[in-house]
Length: 178
Image (cartoon, rainbow, N blue to C red; front, side, top):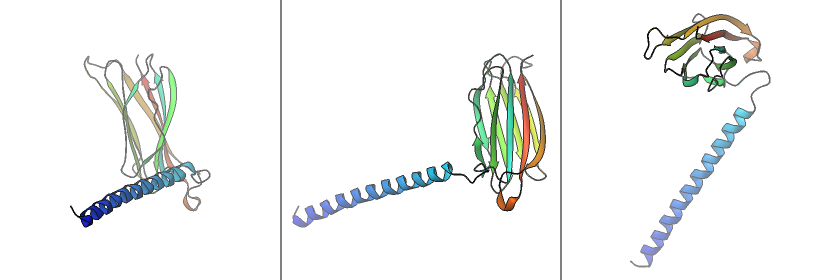
């Protein structure tokens, strides 16, 4: 290999190092911007919960904690307050999801110690409000667990766009083992 070959190899290595350094810089800047935007939501408004929201209060009226199996949102939705994991025995916890532009869809499931699945599905959007729960037995039928849902839709002032209120579906989800 002549002098030109060594020079080309050195330039190629330098070029690769420059690409790595540039990539790390861009990644670091992106992470910083994301952190900065999440850390400073507008006053009075939760990020992702300005136009529609599903606000859930979970009542675990059982004597055992329930582990989170899954939490799923609609395509443009965001968690404003994460579901508890686990939800403690005989406890009350809250979680919320929302959207700054469109309807909100939430699906959350907890798994009981006997592996039964206790699920909630709720939606908030003008004309599409709903909430319901379901217990899926995994073994002994019928399941010893029960769930119930009470919900209502309200418009809450959260400092949203142009002073418009946030369409919120307020859900009380009760899980029990009679």
